[in-house]
Amino acid sequence: MLVYWLMFLIPAMGAVLAGRARPGRRLEYELLWLMAFICLSFLIGFRYEVGGDWSSYEGHYKDVSSSDFLQLFSSGDPGYYVTLWVVSLFDLGVHYSNLVFGALFSAGLIAFCKSQPRPWLALAISVPYMVIVLGMGYTRQGVAMGLSLLGFVALSNKDTKAFVAWVACAAMFHKSAVLLIPLGVLATPRSR
Image 1 (tube, rainbow, N blue to C red):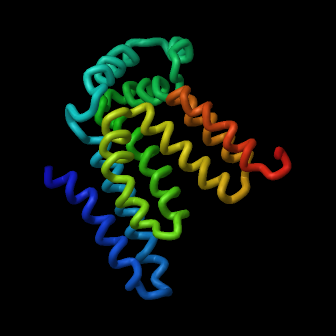
Image 2: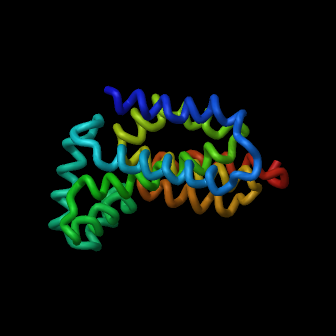
């Protein structure tokens, strides 16, 4: 239980202390975010029997390790199954595939938080649901959310093509991400 509290309290402390930060410390700032990325990725990746779909993810890993590569594309979420297949080639186990998925989720979450006016507060707010429930509980949806958040960062920079590309990548992990495509159309002034 302590780990979950620390996952929340560390970014919360960062949010409180961020107002006192001295300008010109860009390297320290980026190193803190890198540490946050690594910690989140490892906590999500190396969890054990945490999440609503834990037993099915173990089953998916075992099924994919004995599958032919072309069979992976007949499944509903090819990005998820191809990643499992690549990890199974090295016989690393479900934890390392979860590490890859956790890193994808964390990269998107941190990029999105860094684009906000109060980045550490955004991260602290996201821990209870986004990280613990979504990132740790539902692997495919977590990866889709992380990649979609990278798309939202691109969209805020007025790069609609990158947004669509990130959402398409997200849909490779969970098809529900396709529902975000209309946001790119609505966010483009010319399309109105």
